[in-house]
Length: 415
Ligand code: HAM
Image (spheres, rainbow, N blue to C red):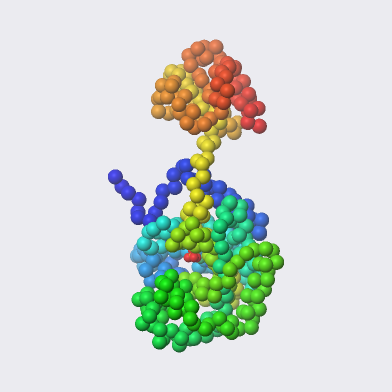
């Protein structure tokens, strides 16, 4: 028997209704805040991500599913932001309006070691707001994330927020870190010793307690940001407070992708264990320019749909949507059943039947399992009289109704 690829999941019918619900709620909230859907391909050029995420990031170093086809060097996209920026520039959205507010759903691929909440194919629901530096856009994006979780009935999460500052601030911080950490290098974990040379910011949010102790003793908070970035961050914080969004300042939150500048944030949920980020995002004010566009600022986030589902916990399996189950007995009745089903569905009455040739008892059991409200029973007797039997599954009551009146009768029950 063939098995699914490690780190991928089948979404079975009993689970797919929860996925649909998450997508429906998200669509409603995104549109409430003025975001429009964008769908970009799963396949992109590897150079797009090498260029955007940073050569030293874990995704680029070891997590890309790459495909070489002839001269094309492609990749299954590991994230959505770079792809959305590519599409935004390629389709001249930057020239059409001052700001573009976009949302997306879709699978992302990272060759990580699978564990609870960490998959190799997972799904993002995300937004990108491109073209504005307003701190109130940061407030909108973060509060949209909070509203989304509220609508999805998820509580018990915390929002962590930090500002990385502009590119100059980041360069200054990297220099200060290199200086401060040089003498402490032997005390850092092997990963962080590596990060010191390749991706020094990641030392700040290393989970190793020894590294955290070293980082905690650094004096980095004072005067880290230039005055424009300090003002921007203050406005974000004040904006969040003015609308009652709770947050925790987290000076060591740096995020794992190079494109971030200024505001970065994470929504964390303790129930998720080691992989506790439900969603995350931030500003990327230099990425559009880096990918060949004008120097336009932008901000966005992405939530992991699988992690949202984990945080929501298991819900009762939603009921099958069929309202009517058509039970036919005998060859002639079976033919009549085809027509009956067709006209029920043509009148928008959700209906189903048995195609496995079960006995009457088996068919009734199937109808019960599906949780339908009515069974239409067509046997030889009913056929001869031009009638069908209609059984109300809630009351057990059974009546005969004329064949050409049954659809109208059920229509009156649905509407
Ligand atoms: P990210 O933090 O890499 O950010 O991913 C966002 C979310 O995707 C995470 O918080 C987590 O819920 C989920 N996620 C990430 N990796 C996995 C995995 N291996 N298995 C399951 N879920 C996962 C980004 O990708 C940025 N593009 C977000 C963004 C949008 N920043 C600005 N705009």
